[in-house]
Length: 373
Ligand code: FDA
Image (cartoon, rainbow, N blue to C red):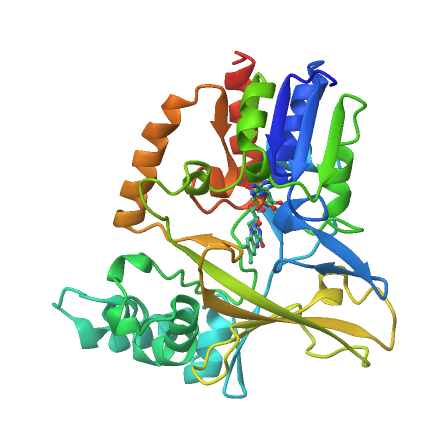
């Protein structure tokens, strides 16, 4: 058998960044991936000349110049700015909450008028301590915006009534008193021209890296542990330990993707459905991430349905409440019993990471691993 310095489990951004950096330092790396393709959840695939985001809309954004320069090394980015719209029973509102939203909702035109309206609406909760998500949202933004733009979406996302959800889920609701529909406040933002998969392909292109897809670590866990001096594990930490302390909780998603024979289906990449009746939360029209690139008479749209997670489902979002975070801490302690395994990424570290954050986390692991500052 060929000798490797590292086994990397999972070819998402964390695993790929680690493998790339290790190979740069002359290390030999084996990457195994249980899916039949590389790139984890940032995987994109071309359909009708359109880059389709297979696991949900991915928009790269960061204020960290180093990370922006790093990722631009692997792809050129376009100037895409995330400006989702909300559809509430056929009424269209701009997101995030800004002067366009307030003008549509209340007819107000100036920031002072909007602020006065928000203050009036928040009066409903004056002097009361919010005890659940509904009360918290009303105390921050008032009832009109809560009812039309927060309630239905949040209830679908969590599969629970807003009055049964804890207040802390919404710590703040960003309000912008300018006519600015840019969702993110970050300095840099864009979509890689030609899709995300190329980034991971380039990261894994070294002769020192071998990649095998369709291989599940758990099929040969004990062999791998004996065979490899060091393992970077980006799968689920509770599964690694055979759920011996209990199961961590996740939310899952179901994606329904279809090709439609029109040039332009919804006029925007991301439309949130904020009413309770519509069963999906978002519709993504992929060609708008690339300003209409692709076939002129075709488009590809994906509906996103939030779901409860059960073993075997894709674990998209960790549910970071105090119970799960407490359990994760115990698994973290248990991981000290396997010093040759490093747990990384959103599943290994049981936390939601945006792409720029997961690259940063992988680079921190690299500097720890190679004793670099
Ligand atoms: P990731 O899940 O990508 O990779 C882990 C890999 O390990 C997977 O390929 C998995 O198959 C593999 N694996 C797991 N267990 C294994 C086993 N036992 N054996 C072998 N392989 C195994 N971020 C952002 O910046 N902007 C955005 O717009 C979005 N949008 C977004 C939408 C949705 C719906 C989600 C769920 C997430 C986002 N993100 C995002 C976050 C982004 O997806 C995230 O930062 C990275 O994918 C995390 O990379 P990881 O490598 O940690 O995990």
